[in-house]
Length: 305
Image 1 (cartoon, rainbow, N blue to C red):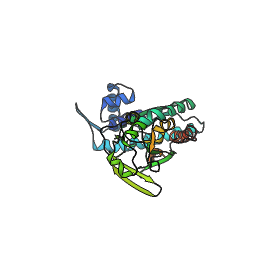
Image 2 (cartoon, rainbow, N blue to C red; image 1 turned 90 degrees about the vertical axis):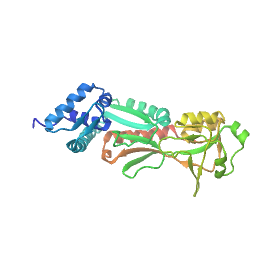
Image 3 (cartoon, rainbow, N blue to C red; image 1 turned 180 degrees about the horizontal axis):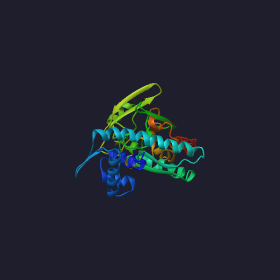
């Protein structure tokens, strides 16, 4: 029994494999590369097998290492579930919760929610990371992805957190200068502020009005990969933007932006997305339930104008 691997060593190993390197794994764990190297060596000794091929430039997983990696993930998940199930009986979820989100929504909406979450559950630690790309939740080691948009892979679990949709909008100055489009097809002739953000197809706007769907390819002199930049350009009168109601609702109510083709919209609800192996995780469940209540409270009675 003395040769059983240390769970901490398994956690270090899983992090090294996910990050494909000792230095980046050490940074993730808040430890030194020397500590990571030592824990991997002890794990290899306890299992009597080589897990990694190490060179100066990269880390490669051996065939045995691949098997150990998959088992280690299962073991660590089961241990986390055990601890969380015990903790939740005390209504005190504890441990590290890794959350991912997109840039703007993460900074403006999810970050304040996470601040309130750890205030309510002080034994819980949250690591929030924001990206301009779609996250592989399980493969990149996250517990939860807070996602805006309804295209979700079937192998993931998705819980709706809030209703949301994207609207077309522009500044009054732009509409005075260029006129307002009368049909979706007219957008192709306008200056549209194109964004590449996570799962949004670049320059392709899919819109819905009742039971009707239309797709238009749009262009314009300005494009970005950050929603806040596009909103500022819209406020500057540079073109028409397609942005979420959570992002531009205040500008619409204040008259700084005007909704264009108001009968057309793009569904983009807010979801909590997590891998099936975490469906019994108490800390994920507590976070999802908290976020649902948070959005109900914060977005109650929200209208575009």
